[in-house]
Image 1 (cartoon, rainbow, N blue to C red):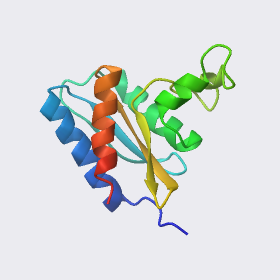
Image 2: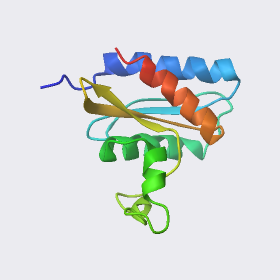
Image 3: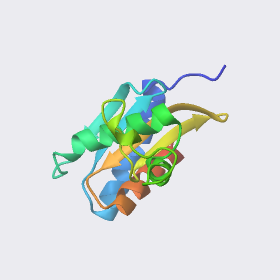
Image 4: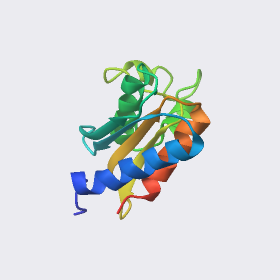
Length: 134
């Protein structure tokens, strides 16, 4: 069995994402959830869009629940695709980039969700967080 995501694991993920946001000059909201999509840690940088608090958290939840990136889900949820309409389930899922699973030994142990910049910026910041998972 793979060890679950702990707060000690989540802190460097959060800190790396926040550092990347500072580096690119875009204040962000960053959420880290466990495999059950429960919030482990969160931060809102000064100046980050308030509406993006919910979006970042939903990106992380979406990614953990479906074990895929929110960008991948977006492709699967396009009109005519197999998961069209999925975004209205589970209390609201997000189907654009910025949510990425956190994996250990090939198993999803949580996810990071980032919001307040462009989709590309959100994804870049989330990727920095993923790279810092101990």
